[in-house]
Image (cartoon, rainbow, N blue to C red; front, side):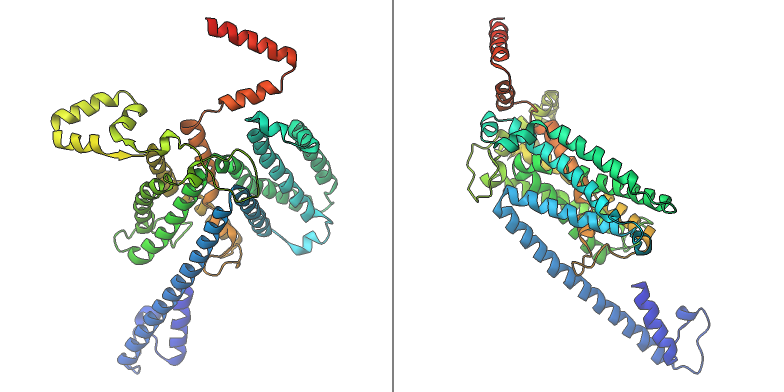
Length: 445
């Protein structure tokens, strides 16, 4: 916008219609005041048209991306994981590309290939480790594995370590005299990029196969927050709070940041309640398949409506005394509180909504810092009005990690009956008999 204003003012100066605001000098008495006023009004109208055009393009392509996203969700869990891996590849390419210097890299054969090899090894380790954990929780899944897959399952850690050590040796041997500093800084940036792109999304497989609720909800919260931050900023920006929000992102405003937080929390409560009514969102698949099969299961308690007071008491029994005090002081409010029903998943959604509003945006601020450091406007021009993949998904990485930690900590047990049976199935016959003897002794106690 600033460049556009300068261009408009530059054209006005060439036409002889400069103003005191443009030049810092008093207006030339030879210039007609009406012409100066008309020029300013024309410039403001042009700016409004440009802003409207940008908002329209952004809305159209944003809607197209959401429709595509919904279509992939409909296809199923495997396709979502493939989508996430493809996004990892795109974003890794964009991030390593900001430091690319063609002149230096012409003297280093296979240097870019080595960077991609590091990425693929990290992706193999994280994805296959999660797949192995999924198979390890059910003995029937292990029995269905082919010989090669069972070998990779059992030796996953050793295979990953062998690939790592091989790459380490190749990377050291690829160093060239006179380019040590450039190569080492590039390798350092590669490691940072892998941490951003791969390790923050290492648990995507787990949250997808724990039920699509834990994938669709957090991604939707970030999308909602991003959309509402843009439109709240455009409509209310710097009208209520004049102070700049953040130096890294001059276009961000307090109105956009706080307005989007309120909208995201409302959306989190409403949307999570809708998701809880669909088996496709709440049921966890028992196997990995490319087939589009409907899921059916008995919904877990957290997805079923319960009285609000029962949920609060389950969170902390001490709240029961608080409820008694509320009943004594405000009987009418207590009656409404006791009659209200919701899913406990909606309370978890509010917590994730707070994270999506106040923490996840800092992933976007990190992207802004990278772009300002390397003097680029967007990481790519792939999506008109949005930039590259990193520009759109920068906040999703830390959101995935938060969702996994939250669901693992508050919503699931790391060990279930199926997981214990799977571990027992891998024991020798003698060890299984010993385990049975100890269990019987434990039960008798």
